[in-house]
Amino acid sequence: MRYWVDALAKGFQKIGVETIILDTIYSINEQIITTLQLDVDAVISFNGILTDQKGVLDKIIKAPYIYLLIDHPIDHLGRIQNLREDDILTLMDRQDANNLATFGYDIKNLFMLPHAAIELAIEPSEKTIDILISGSYSEMSKYKEYINVQSPAIRAICEEVIDKCLDDSDVYYIDEFLVAFNKRGISLELYLNETPEFIKMVREIGRYVYSVNRLKVIEALAVEGMTIDIYGKGWDRSPLTMYPNVHIHDMVNYWETQELMRKAKIVLNFQALLRDGTHERVFAGMAARSVVVTNETLYLRELFKEDEELIFYNFNDIEAMVKAVQAILQNDEQREKISEAAWKAVKGIHTFDERAKTIVNIFRECIQRN
Image (cartoon, rainbow, N blue to C red):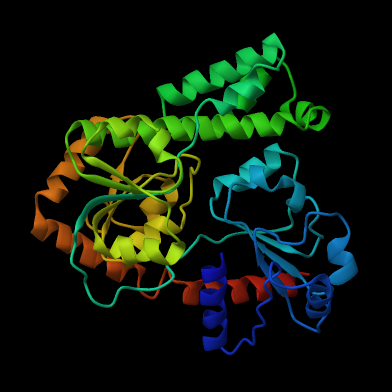
């Protein structure tokens, strides 16, 4: 997030918006309070820093607070509930507006604002990595800790949701919880209010479904003998260690990940918890002049041309995904054509310079509305 803050600040400065960067980790409380009490037009934060406790915003910050959410809202409900009426919340997935309504949240100033590429690779790099994957491995047994302590009725609902989601990736786990509760005549919103810890279990089930689908994709490529380089924590505990063509590396920082993307023929992306949005890795991979292979969302289909600017796959048809990856690795000319088109599709549209302009427009719209 620090890299993103710096990139966003540069974007603001380019359009004449004076910016002060406050790093709360490397500041003492007095510095934080003094800075936040300055006479500014707005305070912007990725993931709602300082909103953990109710009343903090009113005590310290008089200006509108712009909360740039870069995760699933289920991880931030405690912070989101502390926003004031005139504060602004942005989402990385349009589906999350429905999710917030399901959880009982009515946000007045709610906008879509996806991640962005931090920079563009001006010159092509030598492609020495066939398939690049970055991110941490998820232990898939943790969700059982939450399920096993539930009543038999709730446990049955959880198992039903998991089975449906794994059988059909077009099914969304939060929607399926709604369906399962409604079918039994139970109000999910009321149950959430009475049993707030249930949210943690819903979150773990979503992550479990995501982890199963992600591993299924990687294993399908590994079985076919394709060379895969994975950077991230925990993969040495995964079943992928049995494949000699899968090279597992230690975690690298954000900047090093950008460098690796420039060397990758394919950046393989997973966003199983997203339904109508996307995250940074798609834009970053395209900006790095690599071919991004990602599971499809409605939002991405609106933005980019399939097989011309990126390659989509569906978890329901892994065989088709494997064939598409094999084909693009074997066709240098086509791969270079897609990567160049991808770079052009991101340039001047999906960078933090452009996101800065969008945030200013959002801010002005809310000021006029309020």
